[in-house]
Image 1 (cartoon, rainbow, N blue to C red):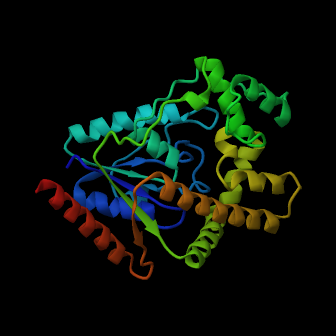
Image 2: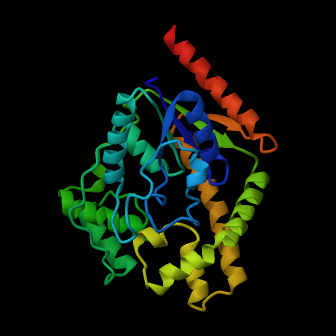
Image 3: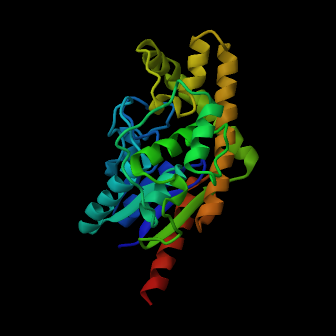
Length: 300
């Protein structure tokens, strides 16, 4: 089957379990599309799939970088497309799963990225100074001046490519035959699941995992991007109580889930399925039946 199955949705909604069950049924192999699971040292806060959870299903683009390494959307686009070709050459079904929408879109759509040969954080410049530099490069930029991360990326893009990032070529043209499956539930259930997931992460040793990074004095982009580590760093620095840090993790995770919904609904044509958490097998069968019918329709 050459059709690529893409599973999207917010955090804590069951994407990992669905991907593994579909891989069993469809002779599939799984490509990670979560930007935080790329890194070896980040396990608990990123909700990385465990060896037991994989159930011997091959997984790719997990644990491929160290936390001090840079890994860009350009890198993911290249690596993901390579894995797609490899998996399809073995007549296996490609299943892409994750919540990082830009990674998925970069891999599957006609997006042109260019490798960043050099990257400068511009730590010596204020947000206002950075924004003024960006305006000199790209007077028509739509990036907000307080979005430092995007402003820095835009300036670096110009320095590496000699043209503004706003001229980056992108489109909604899919390069592969795909079916997009989205998992959803009502907000109250999702938020409760997120809160419980954070509690479970702490039981699994999130604080201990964070302390190791903290004691090595690591503050790389890879560590400060996922929700979980930076909040506990604030606790370890003495700026927050432990309970306040945990509540901040839950709050930011809920907000992130909301942003994920908005992104996927605006950027892709997704077939949404309401998750039956009382009997997840019902959701698996619903999605599987949908995919099979979609394939039958295509073969006619």
